Image 1 (tube, rainbow, N blue to C red):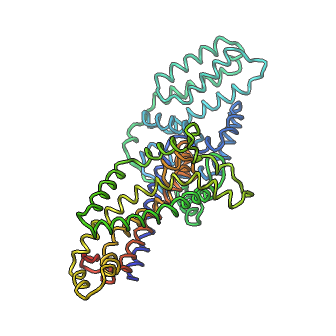
Image 2 (spheres, rainbow, N blue to C red):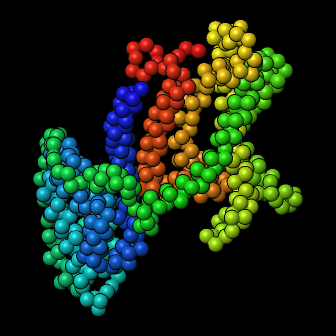
Length: 479
């Protein structure tokens, strides 16, 4: 058993590593720019100055560790540079990649981007006395051009810009040279494609100073990073939400298991009897009722003061603080948590009771039970001392899968009843694109899934000494 335990612990590391790589890959595929999202207000204030905007973006990106390569290596077309990650703003990077896919000439694309930046900077440096409608239109055209990847559209925009420059003598004097250089860089880009490089793969090693290494190092230290929205530690946010989710499950799961064992064993002992038939119908009926629908019905019925049944609350605990008394916490907490606890109990209880009944029926028909009865043991001893331990394996397996759910939370129920738990935090993170929160919860759920399975395996051996891990035969005793 010890050898098996050590083997499972050793398998924990590569399993978590694979989950982390997949999670990290997903985080880089989601829409939006993390730097812009985390510093939206600061960046919006500086949009009047292109140079200031770029400096601020690079400073924020370096602070968040996003100015580094994404991974240890990359395999991409030979036309792509290994410094794309250094280009500020995700939409600009995506525009450049689109241009590269059409042309394949990175030096020409890079020079085109430089000339766009020079034109914007020169336009912003013009004296305020030269402000005119033509200048405003020219600024709008250059802003649109820097996000245009279609050559035909870009050419039309450049023609429009040329017309604006030619019509205004002040713009012609101040921006004529910059426009000529921009136009020449675009024409060179069109005339010198290198599409062959798009079909040649290139392996590029970026070293150990990369974003994934930083994320991995942080996770090994127990640091889940910072929230994109407010810059606060994700650990603190998850810690506060975890308290509420665990509180719900600490009450719900023991009650669900107690009821499931009680009803399941009694149904199995009286198989085919009146109680068994009636409970079967009740369990099937409860199983057919979605928990979120029951939650909404109970919420409407028991929180409606017009019907005189204002028994529950969905906001009371939000009004409490550290100075509130324990009695007030219990009173308000009971009003807000009693119904979500009920909605957590009955779905788990219906599944567990059915599994308990089936496994108990099998156990009661085994030879060792008949032998125990032949020895003169009481029916209570036969059921609970001999049959029940052998019928409890499904309950253990189910608890192994429930452990991550206990911590990651019930998404629908916590949102319906306004419980600030893990499920509600997950929805908040997804809705606001706060991906460090989302992926932190995903990694935590993966870790707890593995721990739950390990717990279930060890509990098998504790309940039944005949279980031998690592043997060639079936490790689970046939009961």
